[in-house]
Length: 150
Image (tube, rainbow, N blue to C red; front, side, top):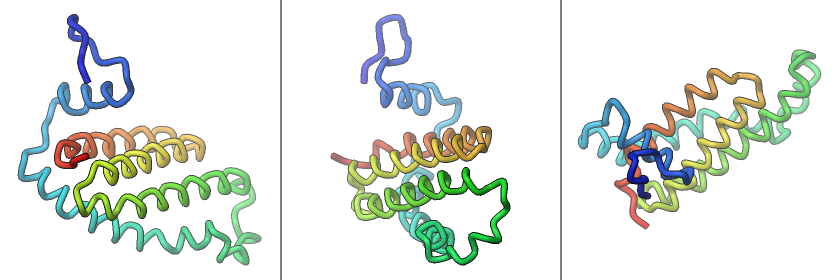
């Protein structure tokens, strides 16, 4: 990632995010905080995945008997949101071994899960929440990126 001589952000997506979420960020997470996130973040992800298990089971069809009771207006959008919920959970579960081992492959899968969450939020109609969630999630991910090795 290199920036041009005029001091503008890089043109590639990852470089752009690195530039604004790390180099130009008004606040840097202290080294101790980053180390804490890298050490305990995967465990937090495990807990959150376990807490989302009931929703995932519903999304995968175990709770289809509840479908007649779903609010009528949520019918079509709910299916799209569930697809993104499942995709994000699968990416996070796949990221766990790499996150525990501090490998860049785990970080990248967590990054993709964050992007899937964003797209799912936008398509689900929670645009403001999706933007805020993506900014917070990507900020934290890019702040700790240097702790993961290729």
